[in-house]
Length: 152
Image (cartoon, rainbow, N blue to C red; front, side, top):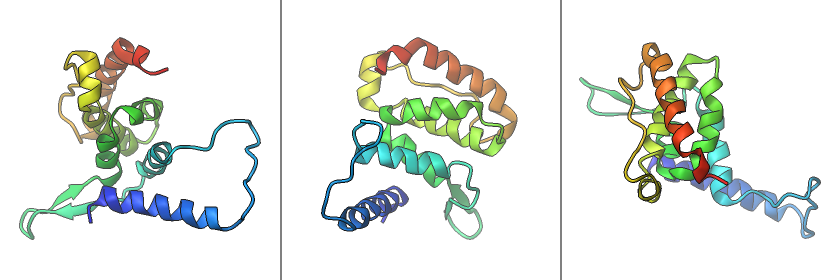
């Protein structure tokens, strides 16, 4: 099972357990609709971006490579993850910022979003390097300024 599938299964199981705890619908205090499955997944992975242990390893014993589970999952979610990632661009945690930038680059390559941007996705310099966070953050914010109108 892929890390993304595993994370989505965890979110779904939590919803099922919470839903089974009562037979009556729970009122929503602020009048808002309950979050969608996708919104819950975005929130779940956003919360795990700063967790340095939320990674897996791939490759062989001589050349192990980290799989940044939360960033990859947000990248797979695509366009719906981008506003939450933009909010993380102000993080004081260099590791979290690095992963938010990486996830935003991946998410901006969502085929549906590329159809709306004419194929213009977020192109970063060196990724997954805390040293390039500042330059990559500027690029991400410029891309967001061009396309933020695509989110209601």
